[in-house]
Length: 448
Image (cartoon, rainbow, N blue to C red; front, side, top):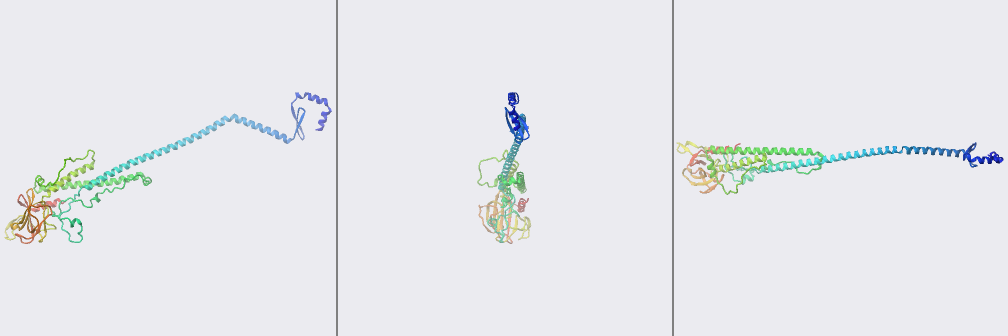
């Protein structure tokens, strides 16, 4: 480097000449050197080491690459942003579609639940209405008297087991060989006609939800169907029983040769009355209501016939299993041994056994009457009367009204008699008829 400086100093003219020509050359240049690089500019030289030079050159290259990359980025930036925005929009639309699908699914589920709840409520309301209807039907059936023949005069048990209030306190009544026709509701009537429905009038519970609403409702419907079937069967049985009894009653009156109109006219009416209200089923009545209406009509006829038959002496005058010591008709007279007409039935008995009225009526004779001994005669109306002879005692007076089963006297052997027994007669318009005809009619009424 010192040699170059000496050279420049040894040739001043040449240096001046170079300085004059400098503006026409490049403003700066560098010259390589073994130990670095020198940049000369306007006569000033700047020397760089190789490391610095390459750092500067590298920086320039990096900056150029960065500038190129930046230019490229800005050149293609719109396309990249467009693709990014499109991708983001696509993802957003996908999310929105998914959200809309989930919302629609939730709406469908909610709608289905609401519909199921509405259907469940409708079915439950229907079941509750049906239960109420069946309960009203059960109440109507319970209000009906039992058609089974009960009651009548059965021998009072003397054992300790006869402690039932109905048998110890109630007055026994005479029966036609077996039983009489009295409609009494037995104590187990309620148990046989109870609805036996499950508790269906309950709100929707977690149990119903977990076990399945359809299964619960189906079970309830099945239970109600069974109850309705039992009620229908019971109603049909009651209707058949009433109709059968009414036919038997009418047949008995016809067989006995009695006039129905006269019997009804002779039946005491008692204190009855009220405005006339025609009985008819409602316009919206169903099959059950119409059948119940028919039963009520038949029952009214049976009740009327029962009151009418209360004047017909078809019951036994004594209680228990009785034997006839002598029948109605021609027989050999026990005193004379000659054929004679026996106008009644002789019932075996012990002195003091109670004798009871076989039908409602009025006492017309109560005292001694020739061969009858102590005699009681009851007028039942419509030409019917009964006589009770050979009594050991009389417990009624002339003009007294008696009812079925009333104790009118006691078995004895007064008058023309060979021993304790009851002479019983049945008369129509004063003429003696066979009492067994009436007793057989009573047996017929209790059958079926």
